[in-house]
Length: 250
Ligand code: ADP
Ligand code: MG
Image 1 (cartoon, helix red, strand yellow):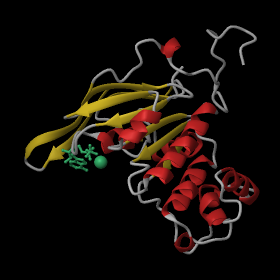
Image 2 (tube, helix red, strand yellow; image 1 turned 90 degrees about the horizontal axis):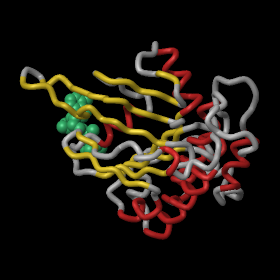
Image 3 (cartoon, helix red, strand yellow; image 1 turned 120 degrees about the vertical axis):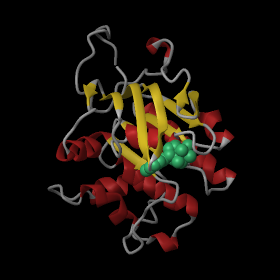
Image 4 (spheres, helix red, strand yellow; image 1 turned 90 degrees about the vertical axis):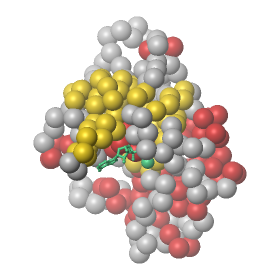
């Protein structure tokens, strides 16, 4: 089973009278639970479009999209919002933290309309990321790397199957970038599929696999052998038991 999968996905944007722009051209892509995939390619090659389609922020023009083996190609707005909330974490390059909220409040934001208070879970996540003494700090009181860690903690508050990151180390110095990548490594070991768009060779070093987009075309986006991926951990909340897994496997 893959955590997220695109099957022959094409994304066309209207060209404003001219030819439509083909941002993704029959893309096959998959990321398994516990796999860290880096997506590289020149500017305009379709990287952001790929991330948006994977994250249900944008829909394919053609092809199929799956989340944990469930077809999520054509969902209503409400279904899409729910699926995104339950299964997808996003980390944006410029963090997208709300300036007037503390670290804990920023991390609990995705749970704002849920019953119960997620503050304790948020505090636990922040502590795990070395921010246990920064819980009540606002973003202006945090360094770039600390803000990025708050953004990662927020992306994990709903225990997603897939973590999507756009240039996660883009604005960070090498040391901070490495510590962020070490966190992604930890997250993937818990069974999350991590997909990061990047220009940073350091990300490729940490990734299990790097795929390249050129003019919307992706070569070898699906692992040749699903069994050969490092998917040795079940996802945190598997939707179905995979009958191909022998009994007694964790
Ligand atoms: P990258 O992130 O690799 O720079 P993008 O996914 O942003 O590439 O863009 C891929 C192609 O699709 C580019 O030619 C871009 O101009 C075009 N494109 C992206 N978004 C839109 C849009 N909303 N409307 C029209 N064209 C778009
Ligand atoms: Mg982009």
